[in-house]
Length: 320
Image 1: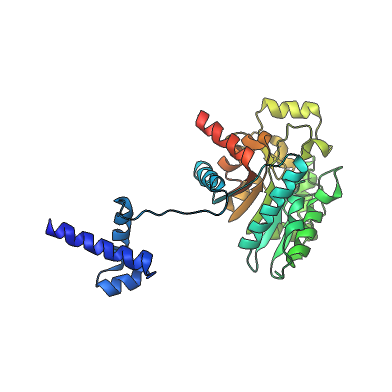
Image 2: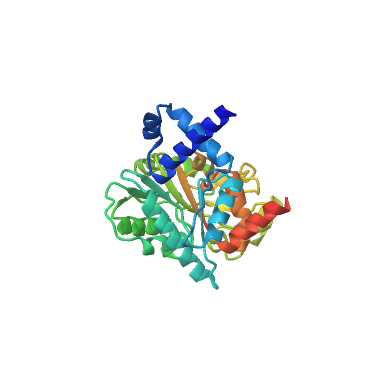
């Protein structure tokens, strides 16, 4: 009994020094004449026994914080950022772009090589970057340019906008996103200028990607001219739920069954798994399965989304 009381006194001393006096564990160990692992064990025991309760009083929407934590655990992601819902798609994309800009400002470091895909949401990011000078950061496309679409969502244009906003450098990729003849595609890879860009793509440390729903008529894939309705029907039959960098996958993140992926010029979808930070930006109810598939395939490890989409994803998991 006496030993138990002595241990409890020591635990209380550890807690007081750590939480009230702001000493670190090494300082506490020295002051109390015990080892650092013992301090760590006692602090953990204090939490386990309810001696110490940690409460965070959030000045922002704490519901969002709770949802972010749940999604991080469910989807196995490094970080999730949830933003407010907006009434119209344009406003929603602006909100997502703003949040993605704040995230990039926080994580980008000197000498990072940032790979960029395309899309109407990704193009919003540069508008909200607080002008900075990151001259050591290089931005480049990780996929070629898509057919007959607006120039402002072309990867080269987005790359230039981001580089100017961050005060960094950029490199461009002057090839189509889709090349139907595989032999032509392989020969293009050998061209000196293109090979140099592909070598840079292999060194990407941070990637920013849109998450598409290829079976939607308004998707970039449909408006690009590469697909018609019969092509979309084939994708639906094969249960494609999303695309990242114009490459399809199913709800489990399996991309192997989609032959079209081989025609895409740029980073291979499997390579995304090896990049330290891949930021997926998507916010609409229709994209919930696309987000789940991207996370399961490990094509993204950071997600920027809106409240509505996050709730749909959580409900799908509750349903399972």
